[in-house]
Length: 297
Image (cartoon, rainbow, N blue to C red; front, side, top):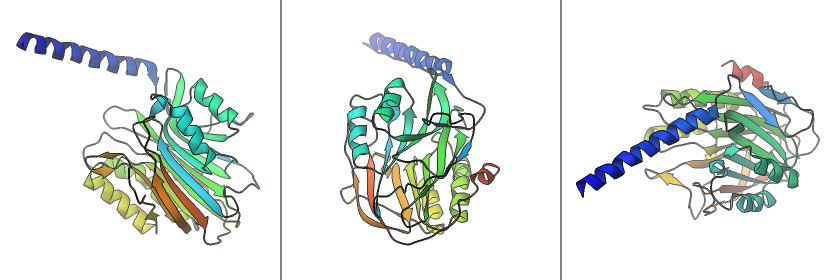
């Protein structure tokens, strides 16, 4: 029996090593922060874009926001779940979105505007955080932070969207780094968020998979959002994905009226989507911030 157990352990280790080598062989980490869109003619070698648009993100003052870690579309039914979310969401914030042919086709069929903050490429397909909306933003930038030990980056989108009251909504879609001892690298990634919030006057949505799986990380997020005047949209029946007893996915907001929040149970990812229903609250006609300045920080 002991020999059988040793053999199983040995074969399992070989399998794990083989998977690790496959991942490293198939993955490519580009040197530059690159923002990808599905708009024809849009350059795909830039960190930031600035555009003009007269189409507000909200629907007559109503704004529905969903965040979901798509788990690289590895689970069956991801497209059906995503379609349901798209039909009921004005701003869909995805993490671990892999820009496969299937996802490209989905975005095209649904007539969505896509922003993808490429973290790295896997099997020649970009992976990162993604914003899906009906109309384009005023501006957006991608920022990355490498995991200290495995070197694979996590990405973040900092974007500004026009609202129907002439204000601009700052939206931060983040996939926080995971494999760290201590809090320094985690805080370094959040420094970009902190600066963007400091520079913005008006409504904010800060959401994503924040990997808040311990007290230190949770405290870091709490301190950040409190300093910027944000509060959390917490589902009444909370079925958010947890690790070590901590919720991983969050939606924080400022200067919006929260109507309701919910978490949606699904088997099509290792994370459950989180959704918040907002109404516009105040009017802040302000100029777009220069995101490029943040990239130097």
